[in-house]
Image (cartoon, rainbow, N blue to C red):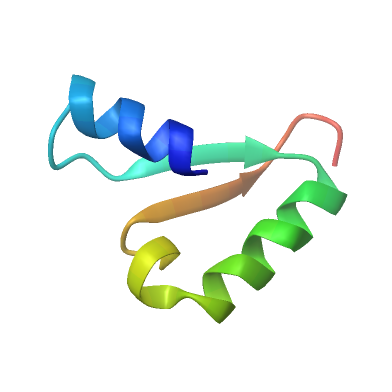
Length: 53
């Protein structure tokens, strides 16, 4: 999440990052967002289910 966030900040400053992931990774990222909302909150990174959900 950090690498994607840094890359998006370099390429498109101010744009919200949108990530897709399958269910196990999606669940982990949601836990991370709940644990550290000031860094990974839903206003900074939007998570979506991937094609295999």
